[in-house]
Length: 518
Image (cartoon, rainbow, N blue to C red; front, side):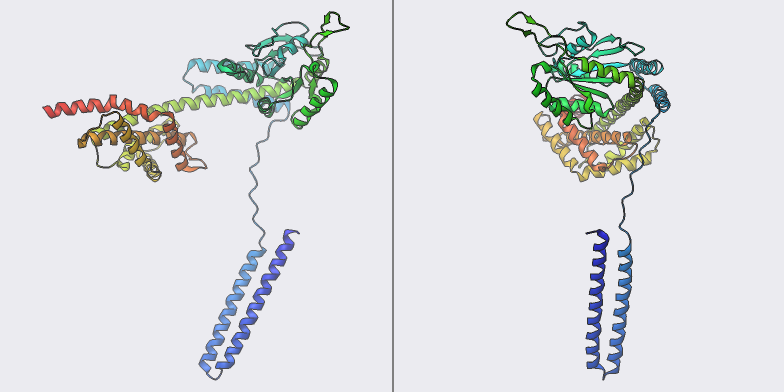
């Protein structure tokens, strides 16, 4: 049943109910009027009351009828997504603009080695824009047959083939002349993924990095895709990588099993990899013993794969190279921004470190009966101003004080003051550095707690300025709580207490002892 029809039925029911109610009220008032009609004053008063009620009902009916007839509010349409470049000229212009922006932003990076590395990457993308050279990357699990496939495609043995995982320890680049392609195609045999150990993790990182640079990606598997294989494949496809899935070692399966596996892979990758781009291969088939004689090594069965690669590169090569150059320029811009953000965070963290020790020292030298958040916030106001200046936000001390006070209230509402005092008391007691003397039990606890809260506040303000002066959808409270939890889980507080004992508390105790003797 349609929504307008339901609204009409509901409207009729409401109107009918009101009419019935008004009729009942009128009849009731008529009966009552007949009872009191001999008393003129009461009769007139009753008529006035009836008229007022009718007017109220009429106004209410008109008002709610008007509201009911208003169309249901529709959610605001999402903002239009920026148009992606479509033509070759647009893609080239976008890539060139990305490189210009990245080079301009890289001037902010202080590390000359990093800056030079980014400049080299930018130059490589620019060269590929000017003179495209197609690159095919072979990607997959360790010993799925990647190197065997490369050897078979090149028609010669260029890489070592082994039965153990991790035979390909580092990326190996070869040149592959193909008919109809002006320049030799670069074919890269990447390290295997999903290998155990730290070395295996490094090889997988390198393999993923190389796969992201591919114009055409050959993903090699020797059976059904495991979830651990499917996830990196899906990630690369979402990046826009043109992909072929190669079911290698097909000679290990009979014809029926090959058909079932191939159909299953095509069904699983429907909408991600075209039907015709999921192919069978036997790059290094096992020897066959014919009529009990000497085992015979069959020829590699890679013709379908080779023909499909050649057809794609011939038809789509220039477009693939341009798409890849655009993607690499975007990655370069993102990497540049990430490095700048990390550089700013380091500078801001140095400011937080400095104020954390300033506050700790001041509170230790001037202990107060209870931890005064407003006093701490006043000291932190300058910290807010300095962090803001790192991120290009100019503010005065009053603005910094307002932000610091606001965050201090959040610290209190989350119970972090009590938590800081409990943590500090427990650690200092464990270190046997707190005595029953009033100053010695108050000063370190108050000072360490103040330093801890300053640290939480500083890290929260870094997040605030990194987000362009916003706390995000979760709000200030969630950010502060997350920073407190991160500090707690990282073991920072234990290290801070031990360092505070050496830097602040013990020197202070010795100085107080000398002053007492004097």
